[in-house]
Amino acid sequence: MESLDLRVLNEALAWKRAGHHVELVTVVQTWGSAPRPPGALLAVRDDGMVSGSVSGGCIEDDLIARAKAAMALGASGTAPQHPSLVVYGVDKEEAARFGLPCGGTLRLVLEPLRDPAWLEQLLARTAEHRLVARTLDLASGTVTLRDAMRGEGLQFDGHVLTTIFGPQWRLLLIGAGQLSQAVAQMANVLDFE
Image (cartoon, rainbow, N blue to C red; front, side, top):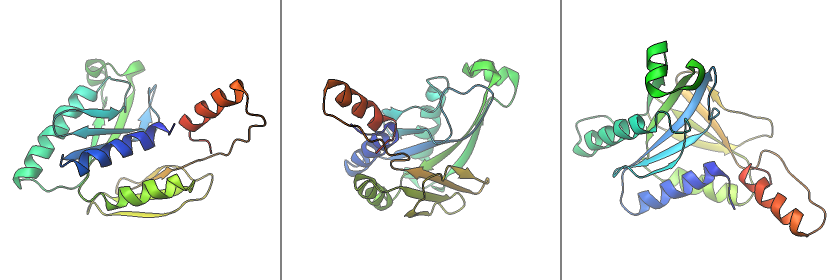
């Protein structure tokens, strides 16, 4: 079993390899009550298929519509294919309209998946149990990867987004009984090594 974020990235890569246009959506900041933490991922395919979640379902329909429109414009060559910042819940009425709990606010980065080479490298490194920092420059759409250190977390300054992938913590289980097997499955989903 793999972590939820890596599952989203694997599905996005498979969709891209199959010839689909794909948008990645990353939670970069939350205020108030938020169902998904910063770093949570959603992948949207050009036909509206999704993988992952950024709000527990509150805003996904609107995001799918936005992503499909951006992909259509990008495919026709009439719009630049650079990442963009989207904010939901900036006021009480919008928070209520999208069903954001407790008037929460979400800042998200929408990113067209142009060249999947970085994604292949990231998935290969995390498969080797390496911790990887992915940096996205919003102005150019350029992605760079580097080895990360334990304890590093998501960073976003409005122009550059750095997210961390791979096992954040190591869990040592003694014994191979049924309980250990169940705990190991849960640990993998929660990004333990």
